[in-house]
Amino acid sequence: MIPSESTTARTAEFPARSHRGFAVAVCLGLALLTVLIFGQSVRYGFISFDDDRYVNHNPALEAGLSVRGMAWAFTTNLTKLSETAEYWEPLTLLTRLADYQVFGFQGGGHHLTSVLLHLAAAMALFGALWRLTGKCGRSALVAALFLVHPMHVEAVEWLSARKDLVNGLFYILTLWAYGWYAARPNWRRYLVVFLAALAANMGKPMAVSLPFVLLLLDIWPLRRWPGEGTDRVRHALRLVAEKAPLFLLTFGVAALAVIVQRDIGAVDAQDMVPLPWRLGNAALAVATYVAKAFVPVKLSFFYPHPGRNLNVLLAVLSALAALLFSGFAVSQWRRRPWWTVGWFWFLVVLGPVLGLIQIGDQAMADRYSYVSFIGLFVAVVWQAAEWGPAIPATVRPAVSWALSLAVLAAYSTLSFFQVQTWRSSEAVFSHGLEVDPENYVAHYNLGAELWEHGRRDEAMRHFHEATRIREPVLRAQLAAADAAVQRGAYDQAIPRYTRVLLLMPWNSELHQHLGSILALHHEPGKALMQFDEALKYRPEWIQPRISIAVVLIGEGQVPKAEAILRDALAREPGNHDAQAMLDMLAVKRKKP
Image (cartoon, rainbow, N blue to C red; front, side, top):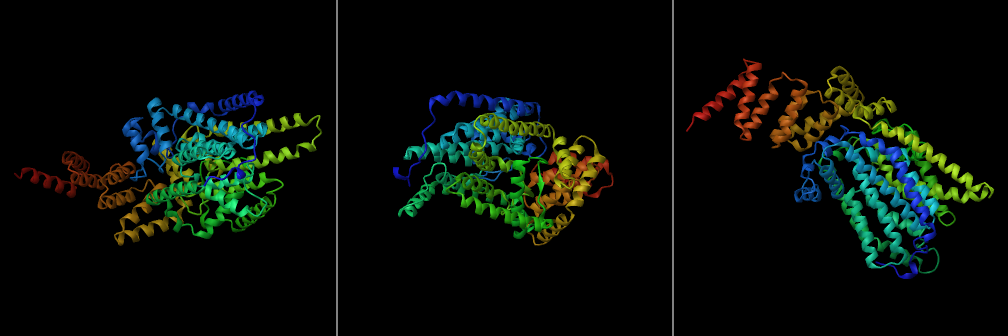
């Protein structure tokens, strides 16, 4: 429902021409900061942490911006489940296709696109806040903080996180469009808001918070939320009803994302992390995000979920602190509404990724701060502006500029060096272990990287360390998987074995076992991959070769199967299974 003019925004139209020169200077400054901080990354390559799956080893990208490529982008994980993409994220996939079309699999070009998307998001944020508040200088400072904050480095430098950049850009453009719509509501302007929100959801299904953020903007700075009068309830309901199409859109896309993640086994962790621990980690994560917003140090590509080792006392204290500050924010909704809007913006945007529905094994992630921190930046900058009159007028401009530049310089310096931790796979994983020596994901991935470069002894040390840290969870997963196999529930066993092998990739016996189950489950391609992995760590083992031959025969590739069986006999001349299969194939060939 479109509100009447009586509920339209009490805010200025787009600022006067007198400020346009300042706006150009701000955009040039943002561009310069982008080059200084992120320009170094155009020399970087891909990271062996999902990049190999979704980017540089993704055969679907080789279609480029063809009809086939665009059909893949719009249908993947919508009409059919695919491991070539993480969600239904067509706009993100289109950017990947465009990267391949222009740069091929040259990492620097892909990084350049991510850097430009981040710059575009910062400029859009400047424009959106200026439109919404009419405050040019404050909007510029918030945009600069957004651009240079170290917690946002991950979204820019990790190419697999491209979806966060695309989502963030269109999320911000939706806010800008909403400010334009609120100044003069009509269906044409609302359609622009809806299309921008659709684009945000097509980048990544994290825009479920968007209608709630728009309601917060109705409180401030748009002041569309009625505070007095007998009709205030009716007006409030009309504002909520106005967002109904957006609620349907965002919740529908979010539900699709949960279904996809469940089908690929990423949501399977819920039975390993009971609800009380998930709630405790969510409270602790909120406190950690706030701390890192102000002191962004010890940043890592992965923060392991504490599970049952959660510090309960710290989690309870964090929850109490969040509740108390929420009460303070509510109490300020008339006098200092930026605290109400900024704090609840932060909480609402973070809500879907706090792990109440646990997807993956992380406790939190730097990239989740990309849009959520905007609320905190707005609250702090507007509060600082309110305190400004306490400074003598003669030195106020100098003090304001000095403090702003000091903060930006500090964050820019931290971000410059944080970007360098993403220069290679080994650098990313080694830095993760510097931050947390018990980071089992860093141990496993560093081990895999070292193994690929022939440093086998170092790799095995990291593999065994990862197993030691996660031993209780691995034992439980194996027991559940074995029980599922005994029931014939292969679809339940396969994701559990797969999760175990993520931390025990050297376990050739388990690769062989999983391959056999996949073959029984009529997934020959995945079965062959597991048999190949078994041979990777035990190259002389005969059994995986025989299993590969069996699968190939079932797929009608008899000549390839015979070659593999002869190779098995050459390695182990007395192998009866290989000889028997060759004899059987010879008999079949002689039959008319």
